[in-house]
Length: 169
Length: 354
Image (cartoon, chains in turn green, purple):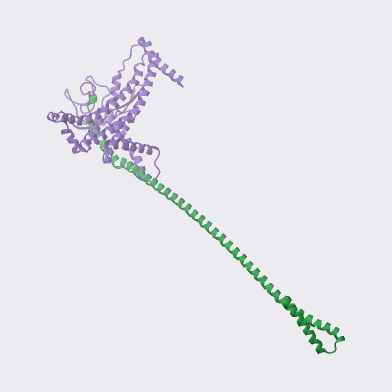
C-alpha cells in the first residue's frame, strides 16, 4: 500500500526542483525557442511573399520588354516602309528630272541645229552667190562687156531663184 | 528471409516448451522475485547499483531528517548493514531504517518501544535521480535555447540536437498545447505544459537506462505524479471561467434534475477525478513498465539454478521478452509524456471555455 502513499520528502524536493526548473525553462528555455520559430516562420512567409512579388515583377518586366521589342519592330517596319517610299519617290523624281533634262537637251540641240542650219544655209547661199558670181563672171566676161548690166541680171535671176525656193518650201 | 523468421519463431517456441521437460530435475533456489521488483520500484535511502561477487556497489546518499532531537544530516553509510533482531538497521541519534512492520523501508525514530516517523526530506534514490534528470532536462533545453538567442530569425534552421529539440518543442506546442488549450492565450500555459512534457519524457527515458545515472523510477513514483497532477489541478481551477463554474454548479439541465442536484455533485467530483486519473495513469504505466521489465529479467535468475536446458530456454525467452518490453517502454516513454500533457492542456482548455 505504501506504493500509493506519496512520501513527504520526495514531494518536498519535487516541489522545489520542479518549480525551479519551471522558472528557468519558462524564462530562458521554451519562450526563446518558440519565439524564434515563430519569427522564422514570419521571415519565411515574408520571403515567400517577396519572392512571389519579385516573380510577378519579373514577369511584368518581361512583358514590358516584349512590348517594347514589338514596338521597336513596328517602328522599324514603319521606317523601312517610309524609306522605301522615299527611295521610290526619289528615284521617280530623278527619272522624271532626267527625262525632262533629256527632252530639254534634245530641244536645245534641235534649236541649235535649226539655227546652225539656217546660218549654214545663209553662208552657203552667200558663198553660192559669190561662187556663182565668180563662175558667171568668168563665163560671162567673155560674152558680156558691161559689169553693171551683168550684175543686175544676176541679182534678178538669183532673186527669182530664192523666191522659187521659198515658195517651193 | 521469411524462412529465417519462421525458424527463429520455432526455436523460441521450442525453448519456451523446454522448461516442462526438465522441470522436476532440481529444487528451486529461493529467489524472491517480488522483493527484487519491489526494491527496484520503491524508493530507497541508498542507491544500490549492483553486486560484484559478495561486494555490493552502493552510492551513499544524504539522509536529512528532523526528529525530536532536532535536525540530523548524515550519510546512509552510517546505518548498519544488517538489521538487528527487531529488524532495525540502526543509525545515529536513535534513528533506524525499519525493515519490517508498518514503516518498512522508512527511517524511523525509536522512542523506547515506539516507532515515530520523523520529518524526512532525505535525498533518497528517487530524489537523487530526479535531480540528475532535472539537470539533464535543463541542459537539453537551455543549450539549444542559447543557440536561439545567438542567432537571428533569418539564419538557417539548426540541425543536430538543437533541431531535434526544436522539432519536439514545436510538436508539443502546435499539436498538443494549441489544440487543447485553445488558439488564443495558450502562450501563458505553454511553459508549464512544456516543462511537464519534457520533465516526464526525460525521467521516463532515464528510467529505461539500467545503470546510473539512469535506472531510477521517478515517474513511476506516486509522489511525483501526485505533484504534477496537483499542479495541473491548480492551473485548471485558477484559469476556470465563469462559464466553467456555472457549468459545474448550475448546469443547464431539466428542472427535475436541478431539484435533485445529482449533476452538480457529479461535476464537482469530476473536478478531482480528472487530475486523479492523470496521477494514476502516469504512475501505473511507468511502474508497470518497470515491474514487467525487471520481472522478465528475474526469470533468468529464478531458473538459473535449474537444469541447463531449462536455464537456456527460459533465459532466451526472458531476454527476448525483455528486449520487446524495452522497445515498448521507449514508445511508452514518449506516449505517456504526450498523454499527460495532452490531457492537462485539454482540462485547462475546458476550464477556459467561454
